[in-house]
Image (cartoon, rainbow, N blue to C red; front, side, top):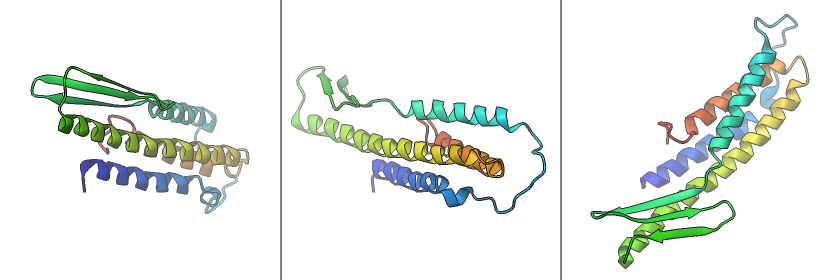
Length: 163
């Protein structure tokens, strides 16, 4: 199994966890407390939503691939979200190098496709959590689920050690 396959498997596992967080049954509290919360949940809720928003924005970058040979940079390809592919070659490229470059780009596109699924599942989970938060008795459970979602996405954010 290649490194790229391991990255895709890690994303698939995260996707499953995120979909579980968005399950309405997961937001049902195990016990209900009618007491006051020990902190102001309004500020924490807004902070968690702001972190969620910035993490989701980090996932909305286009896929790109660069290839290098001993002589330096050989090619750069960028695939936009609209499907436009632009490739710049630094000069003549052998067929094996060209194939290797596009295999690298393919791995990047597969990775980004999984990220699109994760963003979609995260938005659906967040919507479920926000709907649950409208009930005062479910607000603490919704907040815990939202913070778990943010933690899950932080582990997947570009540049994190998990991928």
